[in-house]
Image (tube, rainbow, N blue to C red; front, side, top):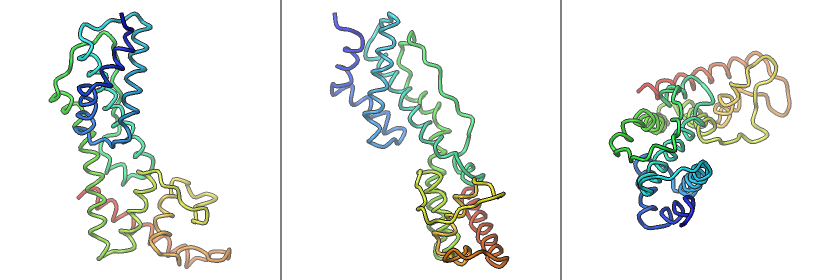
Length: 227
C-alpha cells in the first residue's frame, strides 16, 4: 500500500487535484506563483500526518481540506506583510487580529466552499481596500500630484516590500525609523527641495518644507483609505 504522502502527491498531481488548488487560489485571488508553495505545504502536512500514523477516511476530501487551509494561510501571510508601517496603511488593510487556524489531522470532512468564503471574507475585503486605496491615489494625481505620488510610493514600500535606493534620504537621530517610508515617498514624488543636496546641512526652511510635505502625503493617504 502506498504511503499517505505518496497518495497525496498523486492526487495533487492529477487534473482533479490541481483544479482544487487553482479553485482555492482563484477564490482568494492569490497569485499564480504561490501554486507550488501551497502544494509543498500540503505535502509536508501529509508527511507529518503519516509520521503520526494518521489515515484519512477519504483522501481526496482530506487533502482538499489541507489545500483550503494552506491557501488561507497564504492569504494571511500576504496581508500580514502589508501591516508593517503607518496608521494609514493599517487602515487600508482592515483587521490586524487575524490568527491562523489550528490544524487537526483528524479533521477529514471537506468544509463547504461557502464556509471558507465566510471565514476569509475579512481578509478578502482587506485586499480590496488596499486596491481601492491605490485607485483613489491614482485618481488624485492630477489634483495633488506630489502627495498622491508620495502615497503610492509609501504603499509600494510598505505593502510590496520595495526597497528605496541607497541615495534616498532617511531619518536619523531622534526621528523614528518608522518614518523612513514616508521620507522616501516625499523624495520620490519629486519634492527634492525637502532634503539637503550635495551633502550640505539642512536648515529650518528645509525641515519645514519636509514637514508640510509629509503631513500632506499622510493626510491624502488617510483620506484614500477611508474613502
